[in-house]
Image 1 (cartoon, one colour):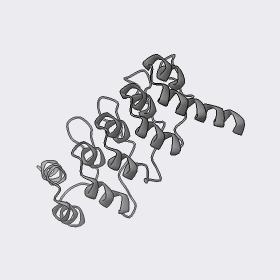
Image 2: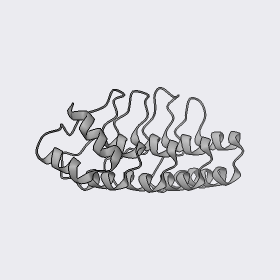
Image 3: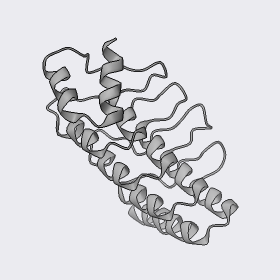
Length: 170
């Protein structure tokens, strides 16, 4: 099947073969797997930055970088879950990236909420620098409240700084 070849190329990092299959129209660029994960999503979970960069540099139409999988996660959620900062940095270069995309199957959790839960200060910093909104609640809890509940004072300070910065800008 065509999607199996595409996904194998991504998993194994065969960028030249993937490029050939796409350019020769042997695979549909918009194919998804059984979990509704597109090729960008698979590039993230298989830790393939060169393939992700290939999609980033691709002429429009480009794949949907915000396409949620069956479980509600976007590629950005997946990058946070796997703590792949190089992959995250590439994702954040996509002009269409929605750093505030919620996972509706997880109380509206954004990538920032996940980074706070996992205690990843570096990822919180990257997301906030990329304009993640520190006031979007997950369920009833704001990122600041979540950081306080998790007991991570460094993340709490970082989020508080961005909340105050937002308030001053209004």
